[in-house]
Image (tube, rainbow, N blue to C red; front, side, top):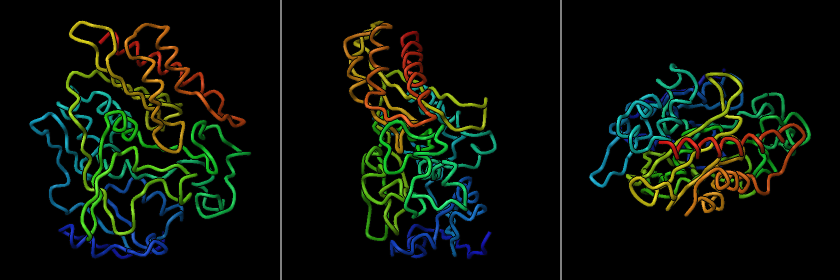
Length: 332
């Protein structure tokens, strides 16, 4: 690992002063909180920053606040474990608590932060191999397209076929979450769904629209009282693993005791370069329920899938997860 300077600001203003504003040079300075992903990248020589800016001393960013209207404000330094254990998150935003519990191991959840989880880098074999000059690292080719692609995208891929590794992002997009991006110039807010980008939409080496000099400081989740939700994740190992496929579903029924869906949200994880919102699949649920409806939603969820040599299994896997999640919700 390359030696680096460590800056430990105690205010946001100080943190902004440490950051690099030149897009061509911004990888020289990296933000660190829990460090669960960044330190691994540094050990593998994927990034070699000359300075780390430690955010842990910034006040007020490690809190979960439940506002009077029932919405949530989550600071970027909130640990994944704290999110998973929060009583109101568990009750009103069940899918988010379940997604948090699915992350890594207990040790990783205790150190990893919400901001870090949303901004973590891809797990693709070629990206993580320091000797492979792949497209995500400024090369000219996505080696997974014709190579080892068991874990790669079936939706939204091209020219890179990475999948976004964040469990929290999938659940938060299902809840219509919004992020606050702060810089020395002020703040901007945007839907979390718009925070993530596809490889075809701009800089293929990036997964978000976070600009040089910006810090993701908060996530706001609108009130979802009266909604029922769940997050299901399929992985190869029982723990400490990333999703082969995942689904976050949130529905609001017609009324107390009703099993007829009035509104729905359905988002996939582990199958695309960003959390994959499938509104047409959610529309298939409105005004209906039952196995035939759930199956139709699963079919719509994977419509347009582009299969690579080794990842076709993700199509039936997603369909099964959608049916299982909706069956679970209908029994809640």
